[in-house]
Image: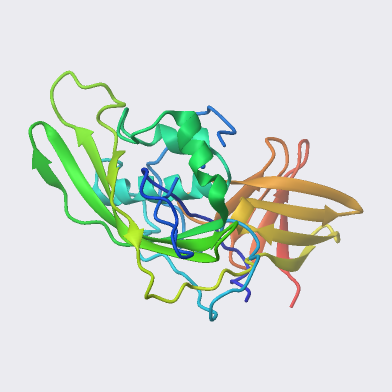
Length: 284
């Protein structure tokens, strides 16, 4: 199944739970590959469909998981939508294998395990996917604020077949005087995802797509979009370039720090050092 021309990524995990049983995993959580801090969370990405890797094994009947929580307009980082965006970012980082960044989104000590154990706990999964629901309202208690976000996680184990989990992720932030900016930011404080063996597991899909563009300078570009890995491969004038997806409040942008490819819908612009942006349109 193909997604629309330009799509984004996302997915996830949480705190420790019992070991897998009867092909239903009862634990979420996987090999630290980085220590970097997560990207800013004050801008909303566009609506996305998620996937961790190419499907291996026997998929369930086809279904396309969609996100219901993502706003395409800017929102306050301290709002309930801001909390939901932390959850979406968390799952996206896990899908990219950036377990150090994902671990950093937990409140210190709340994950219940050190970072290396957190990362290693994902080793059992062949692929891991997630659907994020709409956040609850903000609740307050003892100098803190809380938001709950429903999550469904599913995919395949390396051994044992598919798994299907449902539950919620709780986030908290401090509001007391003297709290640091980090303490005032939303962090994951708990997760209660549990197996749902009676539910059908959505089939994983290949979200990659390809499009051809004609640019105003007469050059054509073949763009191979890979939203599950947050990148696009451009073939232009016999040269292949891989650009990474950048966070945008609207539209989409890929860049390697020098070359960029950005725009909306069927219109994109190619920009390279020393030259103005070149407008490009999809060839139908």
